[in-house]
Length: 282
Image 1 (cartoon, rainbow, N blue to C red):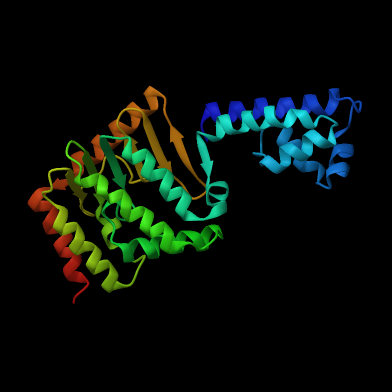
Image 2: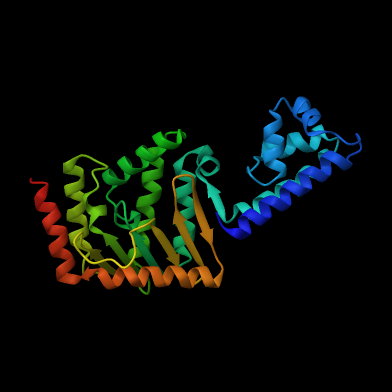
């Protein structure tokens, strides 16, 4: 978790404590507030000490229980301010995957140059509809989110129009392990690899593959996207990290460049993809 994010969460916790001890109802102990809210006292402590991120509902209940319902808007603004850095899947997927995909469409549409490292699955900008469906359904099952795979797949496929707009550039480096991940049936993966073979050489795509036996200066780590020079998005199991400070963006550019040094491009990349494709048969 980023230092800035943790600091902001701790500041929010201090504000919550102020509302508890200085409100119009008089000083409430943590135990008294927990009883009013029907929570465990440990939750009060975690929120006030910045060890847990509250929900909108938590903040509204806190403001009302301390006799200060008007404080909710301020608390919510604080929360949204630092959530822009760490966007939990639980919150993002409350209405399913389609809204998340549409948000990504907007981000990509406002970008001209993308640098992407994929270490686990094939990049969404190059996915077939069937492959995307298996990836999204698996994630929905993990997150226990609403199932809206068809709408989410359509949104993801629409994003691929970006690849056919002159002046755009996708610089994609993938680990060979991402080509081999059996996140779908072999026949679906085979069709996906055929799709990859078909895009090698496109003007808007520079595709590199890091072979499994290539020397690595860094461990593969998480997948990430760099949008122009303004934003990095890193995916983790619990959340996406949206990072926009110049030093962090520069760091991820260096990471991308390090993986690119281990990658093969052009005909050599095609050979790696073909080798994996042939291992599937058919």
